Length: 187
Image (tube, rainbow, N blue to C red; front, side, top):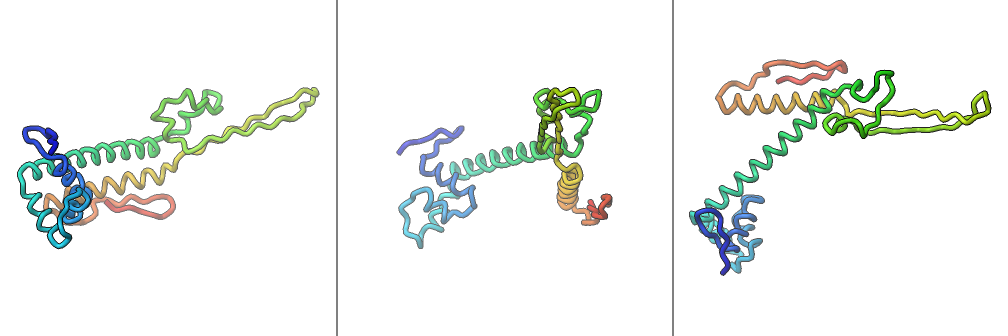
């Protein structure tokens, strides 16, 4: 059987597949079947349990879970960054000195991510001098600052409560943030 090196130990491809399937739902019985082991259905749970007890399998599962946590942390960080861009965006970043919309291609990526949509409408009319006059209307729609701020506060509150629970403190709100529409969030 082929082996794949996973650090200091070697793991068969089938055992590696078992580990990959196991971390999807932490169901050893289902992982045994999905990994392709020819085990009778009534013996899959015990077989999967035995596989999980093997030091190399335990090590590989731990490594996969660490990778999953790191990917989740990266995703969470990116999501918070995007929410922050929307929450703290400023419409003046999209207007020139005369108050006219700038070309979005000249706006950096970070600022452009706060724009939900841009619509340009052109109409042509004949002016008083008989020449065509083009009227251009540019509409820039930003992502909702209130929604982004609210979501940021929710996430920060959740992180605060998770930290407080792990530290053993009570689950009482620390602050209350009220919005103009009467809604509020307690953290």
